[in-house]
Image (cartoon, rainbow, N blue to C red; front, side, top):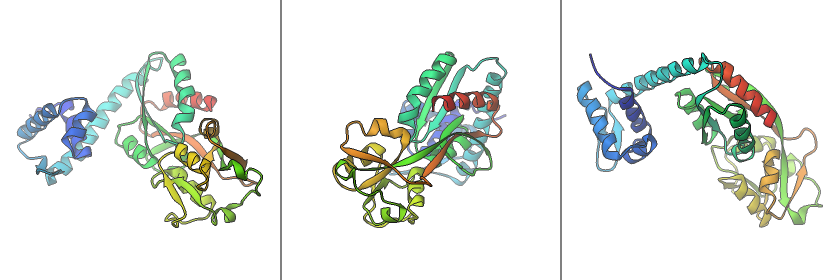
Length: 294
C-alpha cells in the first residue's frame, strides 16, 4: 500500500500549479527546503519522478501531469468531506473561502464581512480577490467555496444565484460636467480608459460601446478603478465605473458623474458555487446576507 499523506498531495498540487518552489512554499506557508523534501519523499514512495528540474524552471513529467489531476480530485473530495461535516451542524462554523472580483471587493466586502461576523461569529472567512477566470478555475478545483462575480459565468458545474443589478456611470473630468452626455456611438470616438485584459468589467464596457475586444490604441488600460478615475481627473480621457464604486473612487478626484439614458449599461452581480457542494444550503444563507448588504 502506497503511503502518501494529504499534506504531501497539497504540497504537490501547489508546486504543480505555481511551477516554482519558492511561490509554492509561500502558498503552503512552509519553507522551501521543507517543500522540496516532501516532494522528494512523495516521488520516492511512488517510485517515479513528478517533475523535471532544471536550473531555470521545473515542469511536470508525463506521469506528473496525470498525478496532478488525480491529486486535485482527491483533495477536492477530502475538502467536501469536511464540508459535509460542517453542513450537518446547525450553525455556520469553520473556514469559508470566498472569491471576489476586484470591481466589487473594495466596495461591498467591508459591509458584508461586518454583517457575516455578527451573524456567524464562529465563521472564519478567507477572501481571495482576483479576476473572474481565475476565481472560476479555483472554484472548480476546490480551492474556493464560493465566489461573488458578474453573471452569467456559463459554467455547467456551477450554480448561480443573482444578488443585485447595478448600473454603470460615466466618469468625466469636472471641466466636462455640463458637456452633452455621449451615447455608446459617441464613446467609441472618445479616449476611453478601461481596465486591463482579464477583467469582466472591461468586456462589459466594450460591449456597451459595441467595440471589439482588441481595442484601438486610444483605449488605455489600467489595473484598478482607482487608477482609471485618477487618470480621468488628470484629463486623460473618460471611463465607466459601477455605481457602488462612486462614493469611494470619486471623493478625492476632480471628476463629474453622469448616468446614461435608457437602456443604461449594467451588470448582474451574483454568487456561484459548485453544484456538488455540501454547503449549498449554507451558501444560500450567505447569499441572502450579501444581498441585504448590497
